[in-house]
Length: 120
Image (tube, rainbow, N blue to C red; front, side, top):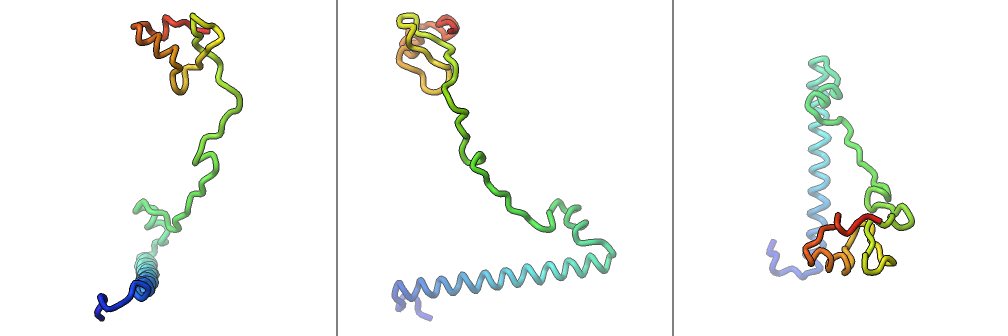
């Protein structure tokens, strides 16, 4: 088969057919292996599940479902308590989490520490 003579659409169809055939063959090979393993285990008088456990493999792989909490943390609601206050303007505060406000950056640029800034 000369692939260069095929159109893009024909190549895509061929690609799809090849993928389908590969999946069928792989699935068939897996089923055959399971049958062989089961037969060998039966000949030895050992359940296949025990052999799989001893090998560190689960007999029936299960998929873990993701919950909404697993993909993104839920906000606990509300703001965090203020840990640091701006001595020049006590109305400005910072919880110590997230991006540092400019007044904190200015404070640190003067060589002072957050401990010197004081807790609220």
